[in-house]
Amino acid sequence: MISIVLIGPPGAGKGTQADKLAEKYGVPHLSTGDMLREHVARKSPTGIIVAAQVAKGELVPDNIIMDMVRIRIACANCTEGYILDGFPRTITQATWLDAHGAKPLAIVLEVTEEIILDRLAGRERQDDKVETVKNRLKEYATMTSQVLPYYEQAGRLFRIDGNKSIDEVFAQIVQALEPHVSSASASTAQGQ
Image 1 (tube, one colour):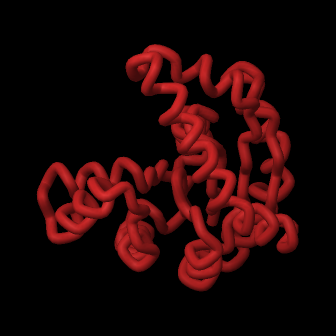
Image 2: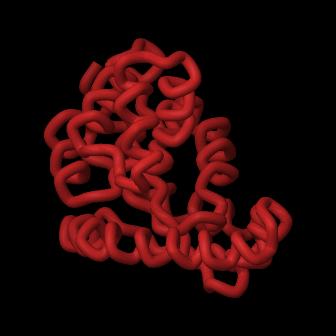
Image 3: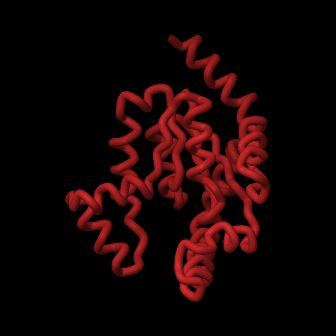
């Protein structure tokens, strides 16, 4: 089973790399942001709660995110693994995932603030954009300050230079993962 989590600030390229990894390893790319937007659009009970939290500028509670991920990773197309993008964001979520899924390998895309601002340029009005992104970067730094050491202490964290081109970043990720993914696939095959 291949279980990978992608961690990085907004604009780091997590979604792009997750799509490429999903295609390479034949497992689904699960974006918690997409899942939340889908619930909000459908006005599901979860979506109503999420919309209220976001409107107040608050983070979606761990229990809601974990329940959503639990349901998704139990789907048939996740039996061989998955690439998670946007989860875990807290130590509670990371420990929960270890207990309820395959213990994932964590990829952190490290990107400078200057490059992030360049990449996100044009998505919003220039005046709003810089402040919004800087706030999101502060939030990211606060949230991941415990998650990164958690994976590092477990020997499952791989730091990738996300400042490079899409293909160069992908090549770094694959090189870091290959010894672990190959052995994970082999042990899965032996267990069958």
